[in-house]
Length: 178
Image 1 (cartoon, rainbow, N blue to C red):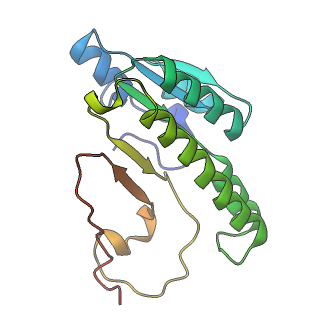
Image 2: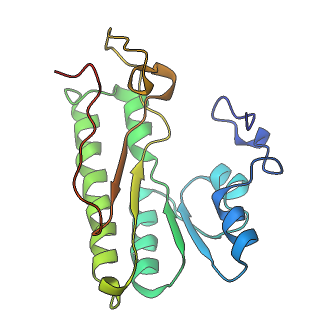
């Protein structure tokens, strides 16, 4: 519906479907957002109404984001990490692939560094934080099961994790999971 069907963000219809950054600034005027990425396309097409800090790679993006989270009071901070997908595309999206397994460990460390930066904030206990970790896409599914739910839609195979100290823990398994 926003006209993006592949990796080409130049067709993104932000007039009809504004980005979350645009919505935040247009609805509140006082709130600001930060966007950390290594992607020029993401910077150009998604970061228009955010303060964008572009790094050369995920490690640099994470470093910039950790610094920003420690020092800034943005209402929204988005960190775009892309190297896990690049490694998966090049070597396969399985834990049995050494390069992909190593990339998973690297992104886990980067996410831990980001969460630690949030928790180290001076006013963390008084702030209302929601941390969302999600993927925009994933590798081809080799699961032959079709369960006709959002979990079984091979075109929308993403991972999402949400964390807030105010949330109670709940894992929502795939309906056909054993």
